[in-house]
Length: 130
Image 1: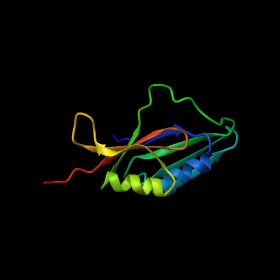
Image 2: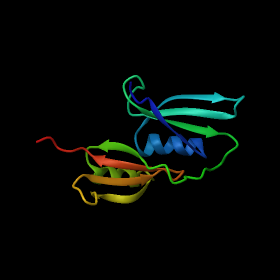
Image 3: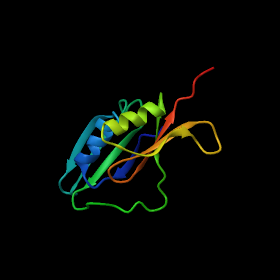
Image 4: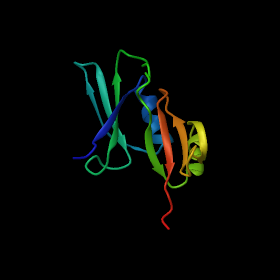
């Protein structure tokens, strides 16, 4: 067994595709409209779905926004350098909500960015191998 994808609902599909592809550097893997259901599914990620887990962006055509609720946490992405990743996100028009630095009560370097719908994305700096 393996994780295939995580689905999040988005209010503006093109804005979300721009964020995940242009700001976070993912690739648009596939897109399919479902006119009878009035929704579109888009899959984005850093690698082919056969090898890696990806994100499914679901856009319900008649819904402009969603409530976050209190159950959702975040999607985590490993990066080589969290400080540099925050600079890149800001330069590309993204929003850093927690600058890079060691996590509270630990040493792992993390940062948080926010997508256009308010979903949190954690950037986790890859640990150096000694």
